[in-house]
Figure 1 (spheres, one colour):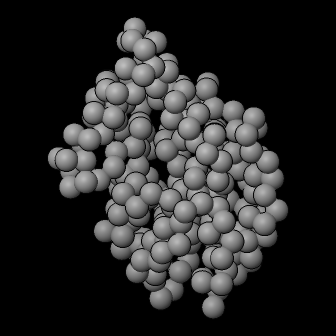
Figure 2: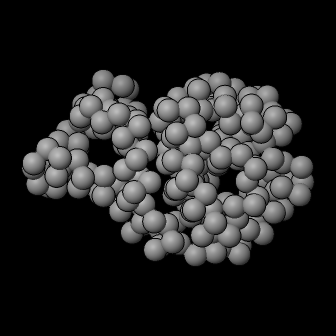
Amino acid sequence: MKCYKLPAHISALIFDMDGTLYTHDEYLRFQIDSPIERLAAIRGISFEKMKEEIAGFRRHWAETHGGKQVSLGNLFKEAFGISIEESIRWREELYDPAQYLKPDTKLRETLASLSASSLTLGVLTNNPVLVARKTLACLGVEDLFPVIVGLDTCGVSKPHEKPLRRAAELLGAPVEACVSIGDRYDIDLALPLELGMGGILVDGVEDLYGLPGILLL
């Protein structure tokens, strides 16, 4: 875990979901591979060939954007003309978190402790809100997140200013009193830090268990 520019007064925490609120390599791979498989079928090429094209685009993107990563939704849109609306539909059809995830009592205890301290919790994800709700329900923490901002909320994929500001607005907190928490610096932290938020980079859900010891001192 690494903390960046934590505000003196924190009102709200904005969590990434996948790879942050849970750690499950198989499910994370499925979320990447299944849309690629569908795109490959549409284009009439093999899954392996499709992965090669995507890897090539990612390398080019990094080379021309200072080494930054690009989200899968933005990649599909920019490189292959798959609209955000189509990406939303695919994800709602393909993703079933109940096949992979189960309640995490330690996560619930952690989030409940943070919430009880007057911090408001939100989720900002590049998955649709429907998938987010199902995921949080599987983890047993849906009731602890009054705010969920998904790919379909603003129609743009992280990193983008619009969903970040929308999340802060719904949480009732000024941007500079929010902390963005996620597992990918370029996608989850770089832009929030530019906007004046704090940031916490994690390697997975196990890191989250230590948040009360950092934020509730």
